[in-house]
Image (cartoon, rainbow over all chains, first blue to last red; front, side, top):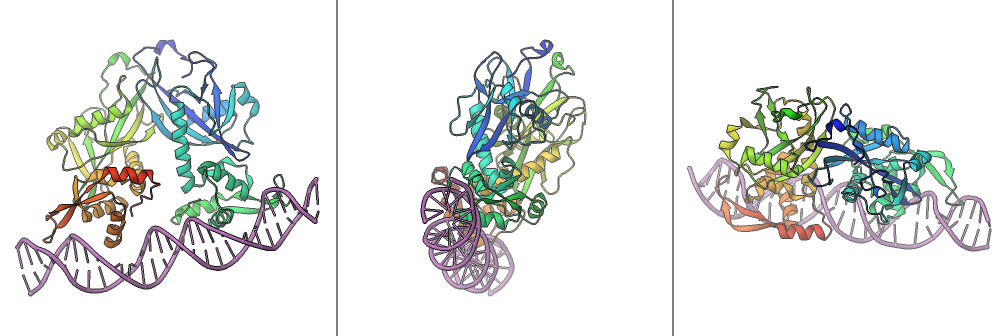
Length: 234
Length: 234
DNA sequence: CCAAAAGTGTTTTGATTACACCCATGA
DNA sequence: TCATGGGTGTAATCAAAACACTTTTGG
């Protein structure tokens, strides 16, 4: 996947363990994926997910967070294990399994310079390039997982700025589900869950009237979870 | 997890890759788990899931099926990847990550002798012994996954014999959800899905009147899936 | 003053839940 | 004949879906 760092263990009879990150963001009504142009042979110049070998003294989750930090500058990102890809011929040359993890980031917060340095680019999810190895498969699996999880957990909020409007939230869910939602029903449902709090500010970037800003209330979400949740947006 | 087979690579700076199988069965109204008594040091005599190192020339899925075959004699078992456990200190002594896979088997079909030879035992899932390492965590995660999946996919059928009665199926779902279900509603729902076929035979082992046997219809299930499924039992 | 997005309630529909009695049969 | 589990229908409840107009304000 990336460079082999230690020739001592570059024996053919070794199993390499990597992690690849599927990084989602949301911007201007579109769900996007962060992909990278490989700087090293083999497959130099091809588009790829960002990944790394898992260090011997490193938890899996920590490896994922490290990769995120190195490429976007973000820490404590929402990240979840997706699946481990282990076809014996998935990586020509080495036997390498990869634990795929997907991350949701707030596009307004990441470090643009750092991302550029890594030769990265945001692609809309329905306009992705061909990626190396089984990375397109990983992305498709992650999208399915995201759709599924968004129904039962408020992970959508991870993709929005701290303060967001209800129309923004709806637009995010429309992007995830890839279908339109009824504004009245959506608002009703979201508010009934009691997990977002209305603020006194308005966002006026998308309309003259302006839309009220809200923020996510983690405490109420935890309570909701405990009291036998029926959290199901859209 | 199991014996280190090749001393050449028993270097400390190596990452081992194992797979552990969470094997569920269903018998007499109880959901059960197959656990094994370790025959080797370290931790000899302790209860454990059955696992193995993943071979270099072996797909992950194949490794799981191999373990199943070796211990129960069963082939082509329903098996699904659960999660990869990769805390750096999960296995004292080695750095070893384990891809957990869970299997659903028909208790009436497995090879009892083979299982006994491996020092295995079925435990009811709410009466499990302490297992080595993070294996109890794996089992709990698998149970959650099983509950979740059983709602949306007909995986329950994997745990029953080819021919089964509706009361048996209900009892299985009750075991999975750990709560009682209404017989009329359950029957109505299951039949409405059109994925089981009534046979002309009756099973008389549990009542004098006897209950009609049914079998699962995979074709109809596939059709149901394509036509925007609303498969949700219980 | 008007275009464009934000915000608001009610009715209809469909699905889930609750619930009680008759049936068949071997012992 | 009776105890035991198998099998059946209907009404009540709840949640989701469909649907149209008013409000605000910068240009």
